Length: 412
Image (cartoon, rainbow, N blue to C red; front, top):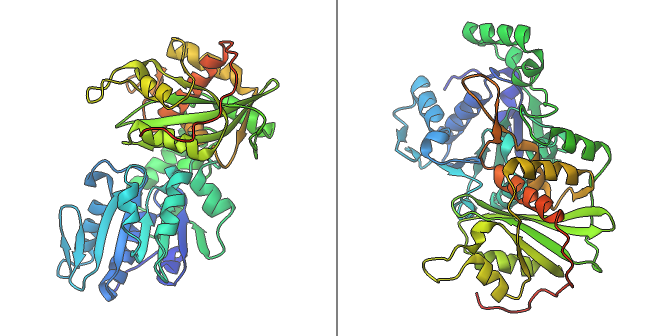
């Protein structure tokens, strides 16, 4: 079987635990990964997981890219393209999963030979920490392809700044692609002339300083420059407050904060999806902090149809002291968060996914004008940012409460 590849990507055919390619647009990373996996899967039976952080449907996956390459390479006789899978005549299978919302499905792939994570720049620490030990078959490989955005993103830090010892990492750009098409060349030249800053990220694979429209860009930069994103151990002598944003189909997110003098220490963060409230309470208990107050948004007061109890009721019944976050507009809450930022210290490891939310929290774009609306974009990162906003609003209210130990047992 004959197939051509950019010289920098020939390492795809040599054994390595991690194979990582990152860079700008037009580098042929994605179709090279697809071709290489199809060739290897035709040579011997492989179980291949194709993953990305968010996949709401098969249309969000690389299913279409693989299908196109099957036709281009004349492999229709070997591969059967099904609606949600691709199956080889020799037993090779391609499966497609989103990481963030399908932890249980991901754990079922422990027998995978190869996992390809595409558009990996948005993959969270939680997702990597789940995926990597799952792909544990002897000689199994994890392939990672992405266009970098922020140098603080988990994938960039994990595989470019501090790559694991068994990793082959290559930066691949448009000028490494011998087949770079004229239509993309015209787009590249136009962006270089009209928006040189964006050009460096989109085409040359450089990291951005901040995302366009990032709401807390200056605050995150100031915290980074002042080394307030670091190791922040919890003070066992001081209580922890927890600040929730509640979702079901969306994310439930929570920050764990301690006041130490005039400093606000963010010592932990958790998030979840499609889980009953009792599981979040159990997660709080497992973390073993001494809690003072659990702060909940107003929708925590709504009664559930099945039980007739609200999340507020369930939390109080578990032995926690509960306060409802005072009502404040989103814009006023953002201003409160900005005021709080210069007093915040963040644990870089335990709060990594929460920090990713704060870095990627941005204004919604007005497609008509090209500017930004006066409201935040509602996406997968807004929930962690909303929980932080609630922490800031709660901080403006002087609540004096005696610490209470977390309950040892409660009814689920």
